[in-house]
Length: 136
Image (tube, rainbow, N blue to C red):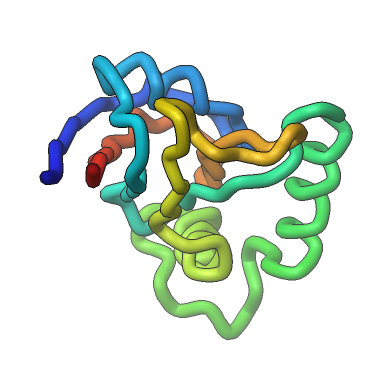
């Protein structure tokens, strides 16, 4: 059996934002066992699972992504929405647009230090839509 849930996240500014609670808030109850699949419906933001214990990890992610994919690269041609748009598309492709998490004993089977992150790659805050599918 599959259940689908839709949510729109608050408008976050550029960076990596912990959204595990936002996602769990949308799903009324997890099955004893199954899979949760989360898909972001945007091409300039991504979603990932990573460490949620030390906030410096998020600062380092932001620094690293900005180092490898810079704005205003002279060979970029897609710039109709500003100099951060195409770099945001590239970064979202590197991170990905979906994650899957096992559900065991009615809980997400995340590691001790893991959390779900919205990776916002645009400079201005944007609301982002997610589709959450729970398979049992």
